[in-house]
Length: 316
Image (cartoon, rainbow, N blue to C red; front, side):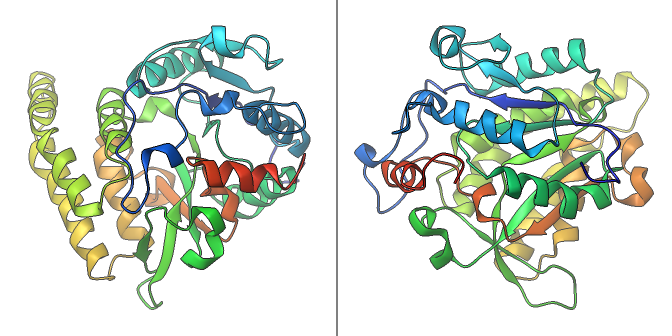
């Protein structure tokens, strides 16, 4: 274990399946997409996808014993970790995740959350935490952006990517969202966070401006409700204006390839964190580290992506 990390981090793996599949990406057909609980799909060497991920998590020696959130009936005979039983859409899965974290670790402790359909190696997980997370352990919400050209993504070349500048003085780079976050859940507006993530997941395969328009349009009523609660608590009702403003500002900056990673971090902080935490962690409560580790962005959504990972063999 890295000298700077005093203890292993709790980790929760999301293994559910949304009963309402996302839209089929442009240029692909429905039969190319995987459906159902992808984590239960069997690899050629007799282990399901999520069991292979759990083994790699253990071998990295950076995390506590993993916890799986998903249908007990699907995973009971496939994995040897505790299962938080849940059936339903992403919102239901996230609600059970929050309750599991609350009861086991507490909402103030950092907890890692990942999906069941990525397969970074144990060495890649070590490298990610040692190089990218450890310098930012005080962050309230940490994630990663994977810097890569589309050609390097192999079977995942179709995935949506975004141009960000690492800083104001750097040229924009093509980046993909990673699939492992470490968060102190008690600092988040949990109801609003679930709302936004549910919509982002529903529209995940649409072009960026279509996705943003739908998310903002379906969030106005929720933001008004949150502001009414803020007003009742004696706080300024600013969410209905500030959240769309920062989201649209980040979108236009991104489209012009002017957005920095810091701009993105600021937009996420304004939308997801309780306002009293916006100045925490030396003024950078949300951190997205830029990493070259492709596997963090290569979630397995298609038959071709599954075949590419299956061809690498156990641990590879």
